[in-house]
Amino acid sequence: MTKRILHVVTNVSHYEDPSHQTGLWLSELVHAWEVFQERGFEQDIVSPQGGRAPLEPRSLKFPSYDKAAKSWHNNPVRMALLENTASPGSINSADYDAIYFTGGHAVMYDFPDSEGLQRITREIWERGGIVSSVCHGYCGLLNTRLSDGSLLVKDRKVTGFAWQEEVLARVDKLVPYNAEEEMKGRGALYEKALLPFVSYAIADGNLVTGQNPGSAKATAQKVAALL
Image (cartoon, rainbow, N blue to C red; front, side, top):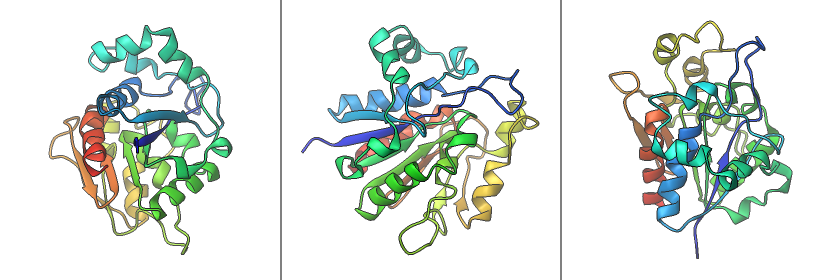
């Protein structure tokens, strides 16, 4: 059976201050997509509302805007995938072996409270599938509860964009909350690399998380290895 991956992207295009744009951090999708594609996995994209996924302008600049990201950005067929993402209600979780939450600061707004995404995540997890995220994508795991009412992340090792990285990226005054602290507050065993912005990915059973944009490839490789 061919393995199938469900990528999750945002529908949000700006911070609370509309003059500051945000969106999907493109390389976090592309780098994982390439890892899965090389292994022949089938891949689909879902978003909280379905439809268009805007791109984070900062992800279209050096150093994140690398050869892979440029190739996707300049490919009309690939870009069309981000104009027509599926909505959670149209997704049968039984079709997928893993879910992968991409990042970009935008996801802090529409990932945490999407009941549709929580349903898909819970069903994949409880069926023995893999739940994964990179960077701010872990915001999509903050409020996901299992059938017994417990939080999926409680007492499990998790990483994601660190508060120190928010400060260094100069968005600590823009973001709606401190994701690292929110994750710790839910009982997750948060970890991060010794240095900011270096690749760091961890697996705790079937939960695989990566810290920042540079961790997307390593995160996807860990998911692929488990599959």
